Length: 387
Ligand SMILES: *Cc1c(COP(=O)(O)O)cnc(C)c1O
Image (cartoon, rainbow, N blue to C red; front, side, top):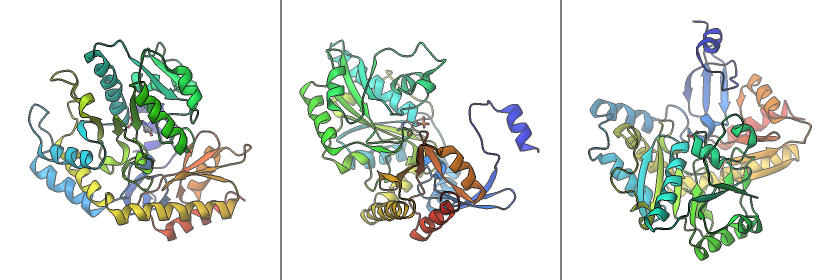
């Protein structure tokens, strides 16, 4: 098969694909069909937290596939209940809804916020989100995502979104009114350039939400599942969100999304108000359970923080550019005349996979099992490109 030719012929052109086709992966390395080896510092965009061919994931998939993959949510699903319990016990007291992606998780959060106030008999439906934020590509999630290039050509969008400046409580105050139902925020903006929220801002935001009875929704789709050195990034701060959404890394590569909401919020989803055919099926939830079993260990999470610090220090020393991020979610801000996508493209030729975030930021979101020697290798390779 001529995959380059047929790929363009049969697939929609909505991605700028690199002309590379991988055949297998092991640990933090990927191998293409020519046998070239790549060190992966992108992890399928913050998805493959345990790297490739991790025995725990492979085993869970094989064993579960032999028993049951899917039944539907018209029945109880044991690993779904077990996974929900793990999520609740390690986040906020409440209940869980499962879906298949980050966008769907955020759609659910938007619907929950509306439903919550509907149930209370209050006409509040507006959600404040942030410039530089990213919440997904479905129409609701896209409406929550301010970036004009993403929205172009898809209007009219969903009503009721207001966009505030990240890290500015005054800007949030400016957008609050009697219709405000929720504020949705990433603790570290991912797509927007690896921008961490400031501690004081998050405290002020939580206080404001409490004072005005606004739901605090934290989008942990990228920051969740150990990425920042805590199971969820909000746990670095003294936060108690009403709703959290997650997806990307939760299934270690198997599609799954989840929403955890406090009881007073989740109870407003009565039978028939929301659903997902695949959401929380046997295969996805059994695998996610195994992912959490490994990631949600004190030693594992501490190591993520430690390796993140090492990586940041190394980047700072080597290049002297601004380094941002939390744990193993790291951005290297390039001088304005260098475009991140050019560097990402060049680094592929050296066998290094890195991401970009915004125009000028290189994004490193490696598998969390990455070791210091891999970090050294990545920096050495980057040195060949950036001088
Ligand atoms: C990737 C991402 C999403 C969208 O997730 P999909 O699974 O692609 O729908 C939403 N929010 C954040 C913060 C993300 O990084």
